[in-house]
Length: 292
Image 1 (cartoon, rainbow, N blue to C red):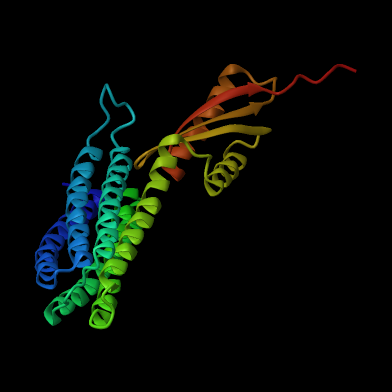
Image 2 (image 1 turned 60 degrees about the vertical axis):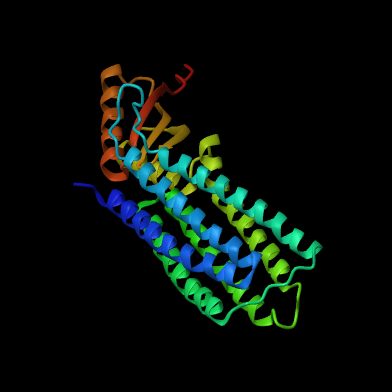
């Protein structure tokens, strides 16, 4: 039976897929009915949500696989890779509709917004923000960058739809409003892309240890192994839920190899038990005091 991270990942993914396909159909129809580049752009923005949700479902399936010979640390980084794919697809959508919106302004094309089209987009704002809230909640529950990225994707869609509603209401008086709203939607999409990509890219490049995690490691070391005089070179490598921690500790020079090994083993076991990490500890001797 799938564990909690898998269940939440699958639920968010499939809920997004179903809702986005339905919204895409209605929004695309509304865009054609109103001859609005902004509405059609937002419809495809919604469809891109569907594609990214499919990627999320697949990434959770891959991440759930146990470690194997080729991947001894598991497949947890599949979620990070999926977040990067989501951001890249979103960037392509944003640049494409930025170009279309500018072209509409250059050719002086105006849209004729239908009342039903406006209602559809109001409903879309409500549904997509609700979906964004669920994605944020699920992502925080299971510490998933992919779900948090998808939440921003949903929120950018909700904001874009809201801007289009405002533009549609003013469309009868301002011929250029559709092109301008299209540019605004594109800018929001591109900002969401930046917000989605910065975390996963930083994670792949390698980040310094989180100060809170470092504080917990030092406190645990003081409690379990008070003989440790110095703790340094603490490095953390994340593979989804699997976290590898390596650190160096200094022990009294008069300790035997057996005593030092037993102390390091106790500390490693405590870190596994209390912090849910896989530690590797390197032992160093303190400097031997000079004879006087």
